[in-house]
Length: 244
Image 1 (cartoon, rainbow, N blue to C red):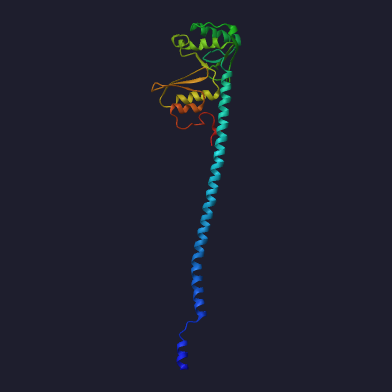
Image 2: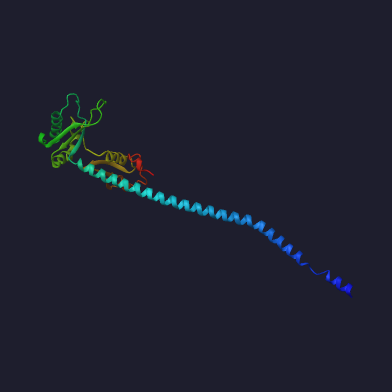
């Protein structure tokens, strides 16, 4: 009877052996899961860091773009004021004879040009007359004439088309607004835009006649979008320092 009990008792599982098996299983599972968890956490941290960096970069870029835009608008406003200060001044190209030039002689030349297109100009109408640009070139430098009255200046400019009908001045003398450097580049830019047939300036504004019959006035580079320009070439406008 005792022998039977010992035989039956020998088939009972040992508690220590079961615990060891569980520990082995847990250890095996952990060994497999830990690298996966660590890799997942590391990836999550990397993605979060990358996202935070990108968002911060976007904010900094937006600040820079806003600052550049404000600076550009400030430049446009300054250009507008500068052009306004030139409202009584014209630039005449084609007057020869730089040697021995003086103000009286230049004014006499302008009086003759005015007479040729039926506009009477008096010496007292002009306050300043002088050449601009570097001397020594192949062509005669243009001459700036500042009028006392804008009305006198406007009469001359409104009749300048008549120069084309005068054999003495046709293709030789050109009367233009005294544009700021920015507006001079803006005028040249407009001439290169497809669909623009004719470009000229009047009272500091750039007038464009389009192939579709429309008439567009430009006062700043932003107005080029009215001509269908998709993106401004700031370097072409001399504004490369405002590019981002």
